[in-house]
Length: 253
Image: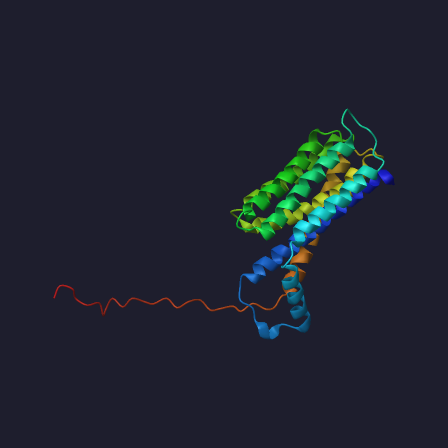
């Protein structure tokens, strides 16, 4: 069980961030349009007060730092076996340090937004995901290259989505969905294949079910978040003036 602790902690951490980003995506697009305040219930008003309170503190950056500290502690204390010339603990600790750097950039962006822009925040997070995929693909973490290859593909997809968010904010939904797959894959398959041999067709089938589960969770979180938000005021289309050619003055006079 001790050897499973780092994978379980890491999986739950990434799954939690995936749920948060699903919620952030839904709230962001709802907040872009005017709301009907008259339909707001007491529960919704309480939620809005909590959001205003949380917006005064760097919540996401702090959560990243706390999560990486917990994951790093679980990695160091966990009984992982030595595989290859480099210990898996060193590989996982390096991954956690990159995510800690991303959390630090989040905190700096919150307190010094003029100096540390939102683009640097996305760059640090994309870099963290890229390094994770890079080390899982070429590092000595486990003995099943197929599982590691799929994890690297998931992580690199997330990294590309974060970079493209600079010009297309809608891709935050892809970032959230792939992070859910990321967390579930680590907590399940990366943990299981250390002790149970899995054939390639089995890995492909399990991955398909992980994608289906992540898509279902993403759909539920976004739908529930939008249904709980105040109703949007739908304005009618603007009136387009019609030019009256019959009454056009004669400029020849």
